[in-house]
Length: 88
Image (cartoon, rainbow, N blue to C red):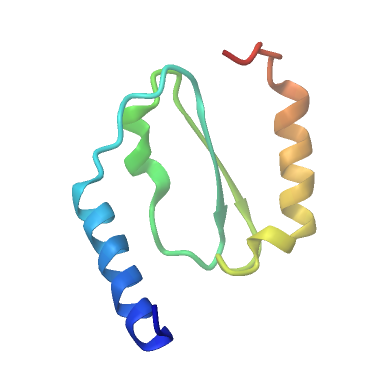
């Protein structure tokens, strides 16, 4: 498929997926790492988390979160507290 046609096609697929997606209830705790520069309130996920929602704010914007040293520290703190569960 030519590049000129790929981008609109993919954007249409993304829009359709976002329009029809209905998140379900999660049986455990939901942990969110929220970029400080992000204005979206993650508490909207709270009603879907049976065991509650835990929000960790990390410095930066969403396009920087994957390389954030503070995110790595936050992930380590969360991982140390998390019970080990066998994968299904």
